Length: 175
Image (tube, rainbow, N blue to C red; front, side, top):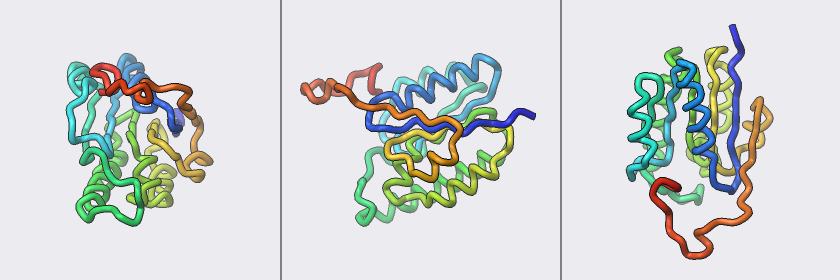
């Protein structure tokens, strides 16, 4: 049995989720089953949702989030904390279902950084996941313990971004 990889896409630059989607697309093209759980996205519709529907049953996205949330660890709303716990419990159930070949935990690094998920709990799950399962963790500020555990870590670094020129998020580019 092939050992599944743990891959981290982190950094302050654009492209972490997009890179994970690309990897998922490649895996689905090889007949592998892929799921992306989005821990923050959920309050708005994105283009990838429609595109991925065309790839079912090989690739699916489940939005579990509430949209933008506070980055201040001490001031999280009770509903945000409850949503994070519900989302993580769902993720654990799906990880251990043995139904998937590639599992994308989109923006989970943010959830850990914001104090909404316990890094040691996430690491325990990753260490005990089905051996063949490949897991991709995306989001800014990946915890040092996650980086140490990972097989591959890529840091996206912002060099220049159109937001700083006042250009708003563009359909098909950011969402």
